[in-house]
Amino acid sequence: MGAIGSSPTAISCRLVQPSRLTISSLPHWSIAMDRSAADMLSEFYIEILPPDRDETCASDATACPCCRRLRPASSMDDDGCGICDECLAP
Image 1 (cartoon, rainbow, N blue to C red):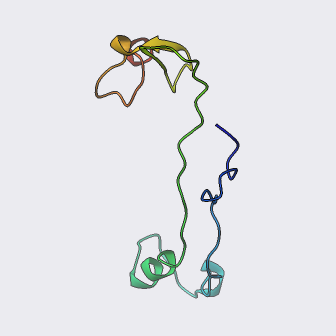
Image 2: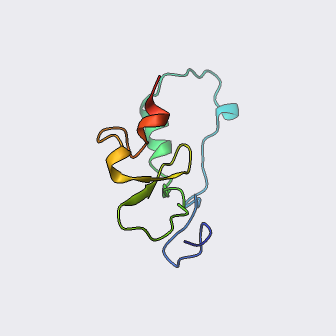
């Protein structure tokens, strides 16, 4: 896997259209998202890329994203998002 942005289709957080509204230009603002905030956010497009994994070729091995160790698939928790049982242990 290459660095972020190495493929022709990978673009990391590119501003499509400049924002017309900033918090500093609003006389009264709150954290609650109103319609204008939702409209402002809909003008931006980002691509969320998964982290590059350094995996060596192994028939049944997967790298744990938490500890980065190569583990057999049997030691990965099914609903733990690919995190090994050791990292999930209390």
